Structure formats: structure tokens, C-alpha cells
Image 1 (cartoon, rainbow, N blue to C red):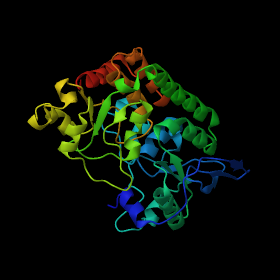
Image 2 (cartoon, rainbow, N blue to C red):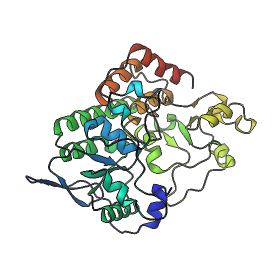
Image 3 (cartoon, rainbow, N blue to C red):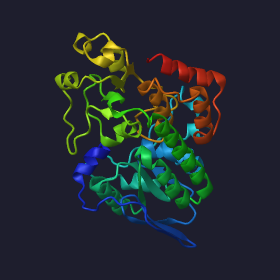
Length: 348
């Protein structure tokens, strides 16, 4: 199956990303400028939305689950209890791209979507992909900024597009409040006291992350010892990691997390010596990645405590309950919160 990144390499385009600047609502249509500066028109009344990837699925679930056609990856049995019925049981469907460099036009049209929603990185390549798919399937393709700091902006845009302005504003304010609270509490920490972090992806912990996967570190004011290199996916070497000597390692891959503390090659790295290697909870979505969506808001709150143990952030249990209530449409039970805390505690 053609990946989204491979599809971008096959596309072409020169439009530059631009902020949402204006919109116009007519009786039978809504026209907006999306995050890539593209003018897009969708029906005034939206009933069915096709998310192009997992971040869009999660975003749409939090805002307007009744408009979801399905999931890119259906929730697993242990994830479903954290999600509101009947949306946890919606069917799965294939990604926008299929084999080769063309979209399965018939499959996309069969969903009878009012528009396609893509939330993620915004650059000329993704803009070209949006234009290409929209041209091939004849369905409006809306591209919104998926970076963590732009969460509120994207909620307001999509809320207006769906005719759910009040809900969009509620989530926008909640997202902004969570980010502002964490930023305010870490602001007094001197720059030379900020953690040096390795965001370790892949089973060996050396895969370099895309910018959108690590923008949570920017929000948290941490020093990324392996910042993304534009246009490069060259992995890190262990020697590079040893020279940088991170004080914290965030292990995205479970296998790497389980092995790194026992691997002699990593034993002299500061984070390993002080046992500051963390792997985030994963229910109902990974708190830090996969997908890099709004699920990262609660991950940001959890990770703040790990990066800044000297700062008091408040009751994590209360933060979990409130986040699930506001964003996931239901308050988790005490046993569910216990399970999440246990997942977090098991990786410290």
C-alpha cells in the first residue's frame, strides 16, 4: 500500500502553507481557506466526513463523532471501553492511497463523503497531495494544521465548517487552557535546567522523528537532542546519541523500552543511568504518538511531570478524568483511570 509520505514524493506543487484567513457561508455551501491556503467549498450541511488518516479520525471523533464514516485503524478491544458507543464500533476503511500512485477513486466515492479531512503537517508536499486527491475523486479535501500548538485554531476552523461552532469553541478553549497551564508552570525553569530529550522511535531507538511527532517537546520547552532534518530520514547513530547524552529518553517502541535498560551500549547514557526512560500509556490512543493527534494533549500533561519532576502540576487523575470527559465524550471509571495510571507507573 502506498504510504502518505510516498504519495507526497510522487506529487508536485509549490503552494506555501498559510494560516486560515477568511471564510464565507452561503445557504447551500461553506467556503473556507484551509491551513495550506487552499480555497475549499463543502456543503452547508455536513453529515459524512472521510478522515484521510488516524490523526483526522481522532480529531473528528472528539468534535463530531456522528459525522464519522469510520476509522483508519479500528479501536482494539481494550481501547473501546474508553470510547463512547456506538462510535467505537464504526467500521474501518482503507487510507486514501492504494497501490501505485493513484487513488482508488471508486472506493473513495462509495463512502459518499461530504468532504475529506486531513489533519497533520502542512507544507508544499502535503498541499500537492491534497490537490491531487481532490482532483482525482472530485470531493473537497480540507487540510488543517495538526501541530499541537495549533490545536485550538484547527478546532475552531473545523467547528465552523461542520456547523458545530459551540463544540469547536469548547474544545479549542480546553486545548488552549491545557497548553497554557503547562507552559506557565515550566516557564520559571532556567534554560540550562531544561531536560535534554531523545525521542526514540523504532525498535533500536535510533529512528529520527518527523517534525510533527516531536512538536510536543517544543510545547514543553525541552531540548530535542535530535531535531528533525528537513528532507532527511537518516537515522541517528548510537555514537551521536552517546555524544548528546540525553537526560531523558522517550521510548515510543515497546521493544526498545524493554531492552534499553539492559543494553550495555546504552549503559553510560545519563537517562539510562538515572532510569529516566519513559514509555507513555496507550489507551484509548497512544498519549504521545501514533497518531500524533489531539490525544497528545493528555500525553503532554503526563510528560510534563516526567520532564520536570521538581514542578507541581496538580492531580494527574483529575486531569485524566477531565480530559476524557471533555474530549472523549465520557468520564472514565475509577478502574479505567487506575489502568491508565498503572500503565504510566509501569514505565518509570
